[in-house]
Length: 89
Image (tube, rainbow, N blue to C red):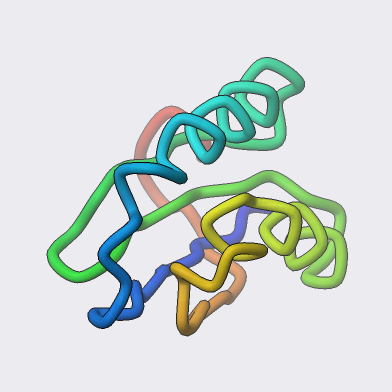
């Protein structure tokens, strides 16, 4: 299953650039093992598409992201995404 995660960043955090290298390294590992399909910034946060067996597994993948563990991500809106057209359909 594919899950779409919308990260919302804490606007009070000024250290995002300090944590970004660890965040990107973590995402690179997820991408290399096939769990992360795509990711990128959007406005006040980011969009990530993850492949997981269920929502619990998807949440666990995201919970270990350094942006999440450091508190830069203040909210994650996570839900199953049904692909109709595209490379993952």
